[in-house]
Image (cartoon, rainbow, N blue to C red):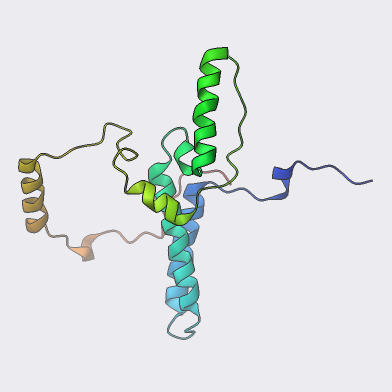
Length: 159
């Protein structure tokens, strides 16, 4: 007798934070191996690409996650919210796929998408002060803590 599975039960699901950190750990591991094994560079590039994809998703996520979806699904989410407001009935939608790398990258360049928390808009004097501070600030890299990326994980991450 075969069991019936929901389409989503077949896959292992990971949150964006864990996925991004794992990709950076892969980069670190493969960079260490690259001198002895030149083919490790392939995995460095793949890991960096994956980490950047995760980074784009993290900055676009907001509290609702709608910006992470492709245009069609994002619009469906917004329409669903409008219907929920009108009817008072909650709709269930699956976020089953992040938008593609280049589309997420383009979204991060859109100021209207990056202004969702009342983003800081610097005036000219503020920009000059920031440039001055940036030019005069030095960081002694030898004094910074060198923690393994895995130590940054919070117990709230789920796998």
